[in-house]
Structure formats: C-alpha cells, structure tokens
Image (cartoon, rainbow over all chains, first blue to last red; front, top):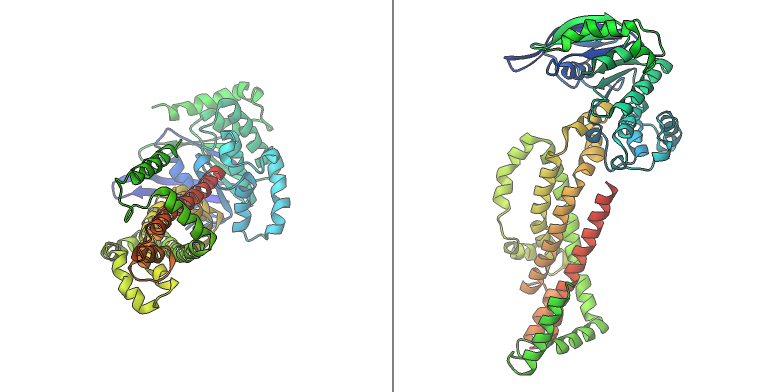
Length: 248
Length: 241
C-alpha cells in the first residue's frame, strides 16, 4: 500500500535527516513510528505525505512514487490549533475537505453529520475552534481528514499535546475507526506505550542520521483495552524490548 | 467622558468670543456656527456636499482596496515578485498624492472621478503594504492543509490565505479610509468645485466664518463616524474568530 524505499532526506549537503529507510505498510495495517526526538520521524511522515522533498530513494503509494501531496493520503497534524481555520465553524472546517473534492454544497450537511456523530461533535457543529477544548479540536481535524476519504491516514503525534485522559479516549476512538472502516494508518509518536497500544507493528527509529533500529510485530488481541492490554505481560515485554531505542 | 474636553473647549471659545478676545472674522462663535450648521443641514446643502465628498472617498477606497488587496496578496505569496516590485513601490510611494491633482484634472475634468483617482493613489499604498505583509505572515501550516486537501492555488488564496490575512487587511483599510477623506477634501479645496472642501472654500471666500466652521467640524464628525463604523466591523470579524 505505502512504501519507503531506501528513502533518504538531507537538508543541505551535511545534514542527513533520514538515511535508507525501507519498510512497507500493508493495506489496513496500523503502523506506529517511534523514536527519540530529533530522529526524523515527523520528517519521514511528511516525506510519505509528499510534503517534504526526498533526496534519495522514494516513497511509493500503490507502486507509484509520491511526488507531492495527493488526496488519497491525509495528514493529521499535531498542532490542531494551527491546522484548523479559526474563522470557520466546526462544520465549516469539515466542509473544507468536501469543497476541495468539488462536492456540491447541497450534499455537505448529510456528509458532515455522520462524521460529527462519530466524534461526538454534533452539539458543537456551529462553534468555532477557539470555543472547543484541545481534544475536541483534534477530533475536528481528524474528521476533516476523513471527509477527504483518504485510503491512508498519516498522523503526526496527534495526541502529543493533550492531557492523559483525553489522549486515551482519542486512542480508542482512532483504534476503533481504523478497525471499523479498515483504514491504513501510519502513526508517529514519541510515546512508546501509545505505539504498542495502537500498532499492529511498531517501527523504532534511531537518530543521527534517522534510520530504522528495529521493527516489532505487536501480537496483542484487539479490541485493546486501556487497562487490560497495558497490563498484559506481552505488552510489558514489547515495552522492555523497545525501550532501549528511546533512551539516550 | 470623552466629550468633556470638546464641550469645555466650545464653552471657553464662546466666552472668549463674547468678551471680544477672539476675532469674529476668523473665529465664529460656537452658537453661531452651530446655528449655521443646523441651517445648512436643514436646507440640504451640507448633506449634498457630504454625499459628493463621501461618494468620491468611497469610490477611492473601493478601487484602492481591490487593487491593493489583489496585488498585495500576489506579492505576499510570491517572494521573488515582491522583490521585483520593491523598487517600483519605493519609487512611486513617496509621490505626494496632491501632486497628482493637475494630472487627474487633465484626465477626468471636474468630476467625482478626479477626486477619487487622487485619493485612490494615496489609499493604495497602505493597503498594498499591509496586505503583502499579512499574506506573507500566514502560518505555513495552513498552506500545507490546503495542499493536502488538494486545493488549487487559486482556491488556496481565496479560501485560506485571504481569510487568514483579513484582520491585518482590515487595519490597512481603516487607515486608508481616513486618508481617502483627507485627500478627497484636499482635492475639493484645491480645485474640484464639489463636495465639502469646495463648500468650505466658498464659505471662506464669502466671509461666512460660521458656515466655514460648521462644515469643518462636520467633516470631523462624519470622519469619526466612518472610523467608528469600520472599527465595529473589524471587531465583529475578530469576534467571529
């Protein structure tokens, strides 16, 4: 579905951010990228999205090189406050994706409503982003990405700036969404437990230059549960195994 | 509270005038010019002149906004174009707008267009400069959102860049509105026989100091009202955000 082939990114001749990244994301797979800060995980996600130019190698979507942004790949940014349009309501922000797809305005309402319901936003449709909590704003951004109807959802530390409780709620919502709608997800996080909790596979990156340190298949039963899964001995084993890649 | 100062000044003025310290040739006393103003308002001359002046100023503001926002948005989005235009802007901007009165008179004759063209030249620069910097300062994240959603460049400008820049642009328009009134009245005083500026000229030439003062203060009052209205509009926009 989505591939990185000897993907390298350099800023100038000296700064090699990513070197020879190789992996393949299967259809409907949930892959998490973890690594210490500065290892280039966000750059890797942006390269897969077509936002950051690749210096060597390639990102491929369904076999075709990704040369720029394309609507089949949606990205959820960490900073929801900057990614939402402050002058548009919740419904208006989601409608933006429909406008981009050229869907007539008459159809917007009945396409937006199910998305609002899915994220418990139905009561907030007419509010502006500034009137919502961080968790709600991030839900709006995810809903907007889904309105784009992409095949792959690329998520860049989407819950990094949320409080612990909200973060767990959103983890479960995204996990359910990925499973119910059979979306392919690439999820960047610096939180190891989040990666194991959500992923079918966890790819750990090492820094300077950014490269793959280890790839681990997570064989924990789904649906996963915040308490049960995290107390599962296998969960702790994965955590032990991957922890060294995050320690400095 | 803000009206204490002007009211005290008017009262002092009236007193000084009555005891003969202020010459009535130049300083008509407040009671006299308020009466003259009321009369001019009642017989419609003041309102007609106001309509003439403000239609010219509004036309100037509209033209300069369309050009200034359009060109400013393009310059703000494309850095090389901004650099290419820099010299031209720097060379044209210092030309005093009133220096264009003879030229404008030659092209448009005695007409609303003559005043509007000169005022539009003066208004264009602040709007251009403010729009350019507001568009240049847009969060790059919004551009990325637009690209990921698959918007064309034109749609990214219309749906993302311009709305994001509106608070900045509104400041430019408010500044330009004041300039539009000042320059329009100037053209009327200097050469265009219409509007409030011409009215003041006529009053002065016929030694009607009361009517002159009434018109002068009227310009101030209406200018203040315009600014107040634009500020309200701006705040409404900001509230929506």
